[in-house]
Length: 254
Image (cartoon, rainbow, N blue to C red; front, side, top):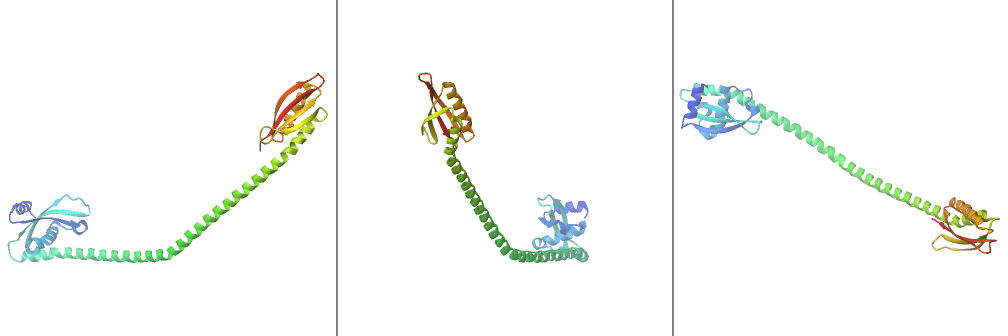
């Protein structure tokens, strides 16, 4: 349309004005004249001007959705004979074909999606009980794994307890053996008593002299250390100078 004619239509106070939104796919490829006819057809229910008799001016308006095109449309009734109607009918034909094609494509897409959805629903229906069974098996496997770990922990604790018991049970025989080997021929045990704490033994003995008493406690300390005992040496008392009385405390750490 001539730009001056278009501006004249927009300036006509009797013209019908409306903003029209159309899908971009529907307007793609249309010439200006074809687009004018399509817009006249869109506003026909409101303008009361048949599209075949309408003279349409339009200009694009910025929109917020790239999927749609927005137009400012002004429509006046076309003056003249029926040639305009024939021309309009020719212009409407490709637009109608495009609309029918869009509808057919939409219907085909809907049918494909519906078929696809049906197949997916069947697949989900088949897999759902299998997934439930897998979940139960996983839960049972986890429970069995926890039970097995608990049993291993219990056995390890039992083994540790047995080892600890055996160690404690062997502690006193080891003490007596270390005492015998360390004291033999060099000192005489006078008394063995319970010490000041659990697993503690106080020993009082006599040696020929203070030096011998010291050597005996050093040897006793070394022998006990191999068996998990520690020795706390006590005082060495000398009487008339011929003998030395000494004491010590042996402690065992269970």
